[in-house]
Image (cartoon, rainbow over all chains, first blue to last red; front, side, top):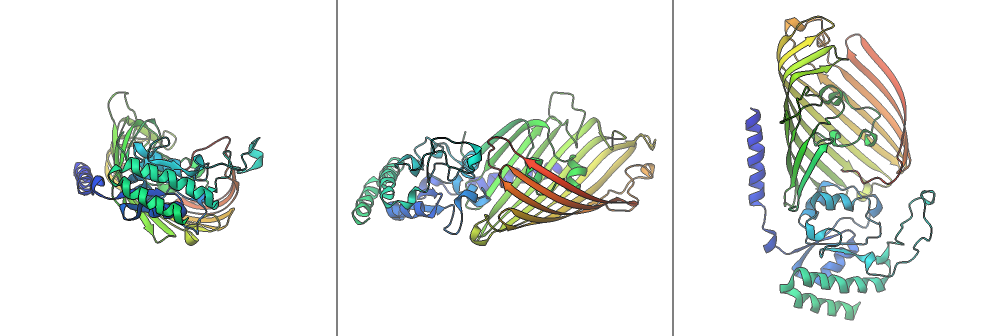
Length: 182
Length: 279
């Protein structure tokens, strides 16, 4: 009985594995931590990308659980776009560990943290626990400054061109259009 | 390491049911439910290796399995080399709208206690094969998916243990009696966060004892037709990520003549940086 159960689990797992869609033939999959970055990715990528926003405007990104749907979406992500600077530190590392491919890990070409590209404000000079929840790298709510959006859009275009060189021309054209109208 | 593949080795809280992977300080109650106490001695914490794989599907799906020494409860007496126990699991989960999420899992944990497994303060010894099956379901809801102010979590697990070997109760002097039977247990809990720092929870757990052979009548294993059950109600206040105070009331009827009422006050404190907890 027990070997039958094990065999069924193994075969079911194998079956799911083999029937899963081939990621190479699908669109570029962008995992955005906040809806603003998903929206930006849609502007630059258009029909060539499939975006997913891990949080919605009604949620506080500091207090998200690394729930099953996020794990599944991270699993298929080619590019991860987040604010960084500790905004998502409560839940993003668990997702990278559980389901992130090598290219979306911090430092990889598929990992884009907005806080690394823009000038950071309110970096604390001295820091200790008694100050409560203070972001050590500075104020991470960088999407609130419209000038920062353009800086991130430029880097996002460059990353998309690196990860999907076949469509580099389209991304560049869409960025040029975005930069002109933003 | 291919994406989605995870390997864990050493001594750990292995993937089995919902609570086993979590440290007790992260539990919603001050004590573990009856099935965890009876079938896992609170948690399965053996030495071994576990491999897991997240499938590249739109619906979260994960499968995995492990190989263990077989030294920790519900197994025992591992001699050091070779695997005395193994496990397999499969989980699926997803969102319902923007405000609800769920996860369902099925698990098996098979092994043997060849040199004996002791329980009941070493009065009871089991030698033989012990097979554990479990299923868990967890459901969360928060208004617009924001768990900061209000949240409801529903959770339940079901366990079934099939054992084939012999039991001996040295206090009741039964001698080793052949045993081939099934026991089961389950719990269901609901936790309601009604203010950012306050949560109210309630939990019911129950065990269904196996039918025992005549030779074990009157021993610690004889429940005399009574199914142990326990009800818990708790209120906790979370000062910050680093401290929580909990007040819990338990009403337990573990044996026919034993009705316990317990009141517990628990203080949970963390020092230093701590990684995020799993779902």
